[in-house]
Image 1 (cartoon, rainbow, N blue to C red):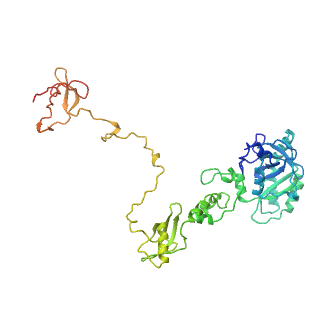
Image 2: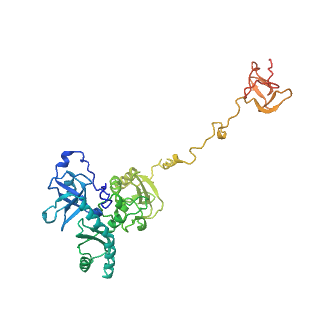
Image 3: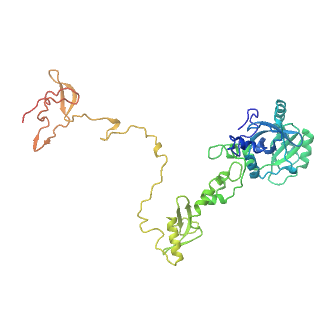
Length: 422
């Protein structure tokens, strides 16, 4: 959360959620306040004057030399827990203090210092190139009073920047501090869109970075392809660590991948594992998909137990396992078909919901007979209808149906209108 007076200088990322913010006793129990500056730089300061501070306030804090301007991000009891988590240790054993809530004069001077940051970074890059230093100046952060600046740089190896510090101090007349950052911090500062289509985690919410190694990919059975596992920063993707614990916990109840299953036909080596479905695929050749057989973890433990007793089953599968139909994978997009709103035919199989006339014995032809009456013809000419044991022509009507109406609501007339007595 960024304050209105901050104008976006402080990072919007938050490393902790203050779930005790609505408890007054928890806020007053600790006099230490967490203050955040540019590029996720944070510090812990003592509220010696007892100021009523809340999250989002801009304060002037003690610095060496002068003072700095930062945003309050955490107050109360959780500050002590955050200090233990980050293993914070004050310099010289003395914790700096908060001077005051930032005044308009402090903010005006701070804004003037921030305007100089971009131009200072461009000149510093040129100076480093002239000195032949293999380093990249990623960003510059001026102190609130403008007397000091922190230069963030990226370098693959060790860099001797003592000469650079002298040149920068003489050029800008400030106190210089060099701070090295990694490729992940640089990517988080620049930002971008990841291969998942969303904003980079390091630029949206991550503030602390944990090392990622290829073992996380092996646990999740991911392809060890550098092009797929590498992020925009050139390092392994941070999201590879998100589900490692879930995979590790699921694989604890599965047989070891080093065990070879022995049958009367062949020896089977582990090929791949579906940890959550508890399905294991074995191959007759190690590390090659030859004669693949997929069995459940329960069956694998049974075969391992039989091998320990010196027995070998005929096959890895159960006797009735081959006869079982394989279940089809669930299609989560089946309900999102493009034709799910189209009109379907009725139960009789007619398209567009068309229906036949209710009275199938006669169909209105639309022609007029002599004398002005409309003509009805049989829907099924030359077809005899069987009623009970008697067979009568198509045009013959049942008893008591002389007054029956046609399908169009008009009394039957002509050939179909006459009733016959049996």
